Length: 494
Image 1 (cartoon, rainbow, N blue to C red):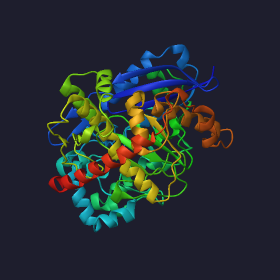
Image 2: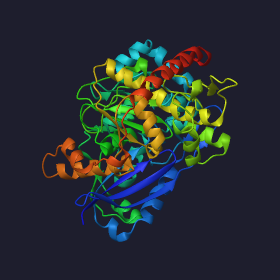
Image 3: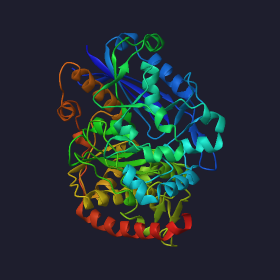
């Protein structure tokens, strides 16, 4: 048996899968929950000790026999998180996460110092947003001066796991492009933005590597700690969206992946740089060599979870209740900014339920509106893709939302595109495993990632969902109303 392993470090959990690349199946997987520090000012943080424990628990749950067969490992991690370490590799502060919105002031400071939003986009291909890493670093400098003075290593969550496995301090282009320190078009650190934060910052950033290259090899220390083979390659890895693209086969022009998890993301592979930051389309690099224009919303299953809790329903009950309402929920709209929002850029945004009348106020309409709102929020990204000349063929759907038949149909109808679901779940972890296989094969000759994905990423035809013309027409009207309400509310939260 020949296997590779994929690790996915998410906001809510860490997962490890062992993938038999000859039989093309996941033979074993393990997971461990992750805690979250959440405060009223928008703070969302975790601790390195929790990541360390996650590795121990997940690998500890896997059989020793299967672990011995692992030939390479690939790591996927939540994007943008700032892991600050001192010269001895000790954490200087908590890890500020992608969903942390406490850095609004730092975003303003960097943007103004750069000469305005347009100058930031010229330097990075992206706006300076609270979710990104750069303002988190400035926050540390402004609020924890002693910790910043001792700062030696700047890592993203997936880089931290790579470092734990190999002892090597490197970063690949895909995750680097989500730091707001990186020139995505030219694939290098932006000295202009780095210098605004601190003149020495660029000197302590990690070495950049190609996504096909190994981050390093499993160290003797890691091999002993986790029961895995010493000396096997650990691939470059990447952010969870970049690895999700690999795990869904979105490594060629025309395919889009939509992830419906805690956050909502819509992204597609491109052979050339594509970005429209003004409309929420970030200019990221892929972790396979091209680019990955991406839209991210901060509230996807967040909205449905809050509505579920409000009515004390489980997931199936929510879906069942939503199925009783018509497309468009009779005019009821959920504006799902429970955690503030990134697209549109409203870190101080607030959620609301609107469009209520004496005739349409019921559980069914509110339940369905919560499902619809998550997709409405990403439809703007689809329109931005099309304006830039991207011609989508279909959407590969992953995340918790992909398990719901009604949500799949809602997504197909609102986006007016066929929805396809990968046969194997855990797309980000599987993407890490397939990237690890790519890295392994590249050691003995050049391997094409698109061909590799075509061989290993299969679709579940039983979950294929096509748009229904009548529903599409209804949702065109409902989306127009949603868009109008959001634009009306935006000045209240800017």
